Image (cartoon, rainbow over all chains, first blue to last red; front, side, top):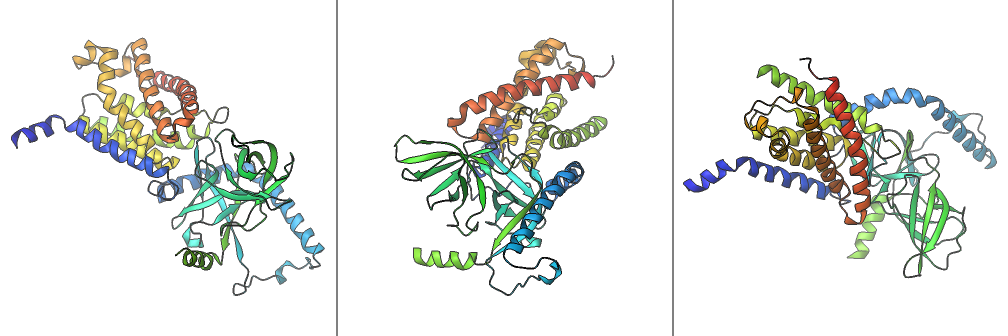
Length: 275
Length: 167
């Protein structure tokens, strides 16, 4: 007993080092798995608050560009409405009916922190569960997809950016129904990869890629990017396609979070059929 | 002692803030970031209890992990250099360190540089290996370590000489 105590006292710093290392490495391993990386996150009061403050200052420098983008998007939406035969002169007539059966509901949010230089990048938003943002909601801008909400605290939420090794999003060619998965090879923040596109798919450089709508997260047909180049993989049966994103991932400000009202129902149904 | 505690608390907070607000957003050429926050570990008083030092370094790393969403990689890297610091100090400064009369503020420039380079490179290598965590990206890890390392070392040496106390 005496010897054990002596040993503990003598090597207490090494033991402390080993214990703390185990904690740190445990947290690191957790952060590399898609579902478990929720312990250490930037959605808490301190980090979220600090990011909000710095972002507020940052925003003044980008106001002009944001306004321009909003104006362009607004104009496009009004034109679309007009072409559909809806009168756009009096916007206040359009009221949101929360009881009807619209499947997707869009919510505004502001990006307060955005990483793009690591291999696992996350984005922090300034809205959380207080504004009914929850796990597994899609995040988009007017130009295309950004990522998926992974964790929501009361006031902030964390998004797995599409620039993340763990991100896998269902996507397809706009022209045809050939599906694949969207991944990132960590090389460039503006180029992502679409894998598992069958060999028969008619690919052409410059073609548009959109979301596939096979999950409950994104509706079908949300823009992603255009084909930059493509090649067959080593088995020569599937294409790996490089996609140039429409979004500039290094500069995102305001985003929309998509809530799928039927997500719970669909998931419950899928669970039933699996059993 | 009291004065030194206050100094270290102020240093801890200000280095974290500077790192998060300014240095994490530099991104030279898109991915090169300096990490000068390890100055806290470099300059921590030598005569203090080792376990206090280990715990403080761990907390410093964990704080940066919170801001960077990086799990525990900063914490592990900081902990490792904090644990290795006595050995590195002994190798760099020799007798001065053993006789407990080493003052990092007016240490010879050459020895100080070697000390900073060793600490920064070990820290960066651990940090990026844990952050990436796949052997497939070994080139990415090494290039990040090298370029960010050079950048960090330059920043650290510059700020050390800027805040050097006059003799």
